[in-house]
Length: 134
Image 1 (cartoon, one colour):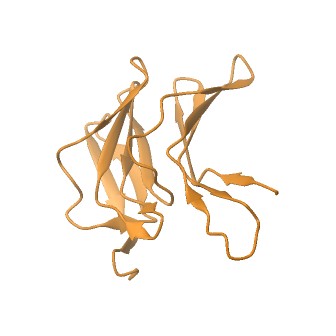
Image 2 (spheres, helix red, strand yellow):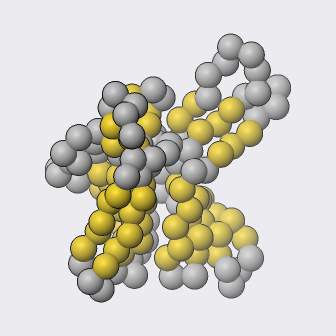
Image 3 (cartoon, helix red, strand yellow):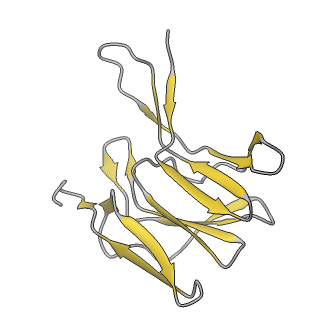
């Protein structure tokens, strides 16, 4: 059976391109895609892919942003057909994901994220809520 992986979020941090989450499609009728918790990085200087620590929760169509030259934050997204409000923080030095106690005020997917103010502030814009409303 054919498998296709779709990593919906890519983030650049310290000369690495991180492909985070997404889904795996088996290209078969009636077989829903599987949401992924994977995190892989491509080293621009090494010209190769390596596996990083997996997220605590599988997610696709989430928002993600690099901050402070060490961290990546992942916001909301879909886990299967549920819209999430959880936030995870990746530490590139320790190679681990931490689920934060703080959550988004509402479940949100398909949003845009950007850091400002020297990575001290993260703005989240747009998206789709838990009722699939834009």
